[in-house]
Image (cartoon, rainbow, N blue to C red; front, top):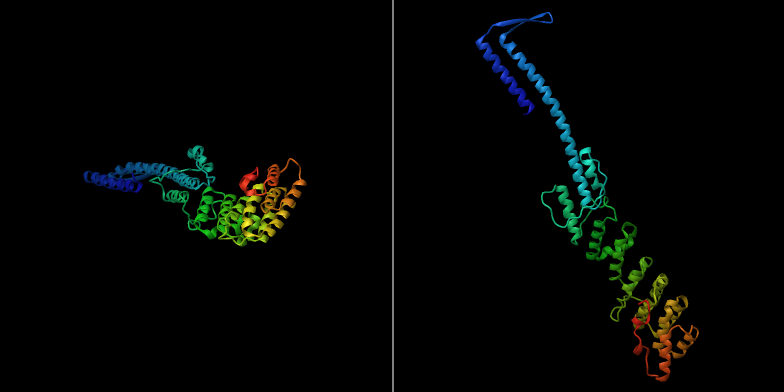
Length: 346
């Protein structure tokens, strides 16, 4: 019962009781308390025990009411803490949250847990519903503006949702990939790798040169293999040299053969021979490509000179080709070898 209603009901009851007794006996009764004589109507004497009982019961109800109030307040606080903890776990960014004893032993697990949800859930709080919808949108491939949700500065750059969200943007916004390239330190390695791959699949050699130090072997080959007779992607000897110089320790024999295929369609034979002679002198992995180029351009004597400088157990296939060439001058290197099959690392 509500305390206020109880007090009002008690006062009404005492009023009715006093009126009833007074209607029966309007006399007075005298009683001495601590030497002080009290002469009160009988109706008042009848009300006094009820009033004392009411005061004691009001104190009792107030005490336990306050006790229940603080207990409920504690549970409400725990409920809010649990809601917050679930919110951050859904977003993949669990945070340390304090709970009272009743929940601490189990709910504190959420401080180190991430929640994976495969379908929508009904009946959640607005905050959890917002987190769940955001998570499902991102995982479905949509880009979500985290700034609008006040999460951009809260979620870490390595958070799986942040990574996936930025990858979604890279796939839908061609300009964003270059923005990531410009501000590498602001993004995780996974996002940068995706941006680099996307950038290499859309840019040309002039723009790519700005970020040459960020390019790796895979992204360089992605860019290189897009060069065609119809679109040179602004490739020239200078920017090709810069990329090869930057990546020379990572490039394989098969990579130099891929460069040969592109160079043949873009540069003159003299330019190609100069390029690959220089590459071969600096990197033994380019020797196969240089030798192949000599033979394709029918520079047999130079190819023989090159082979004479190598060990007899090296470039066996090329030596065999030269022997066949001596017997039948009509053989061409392209008749017997495919560039993508020459190197053992292909």
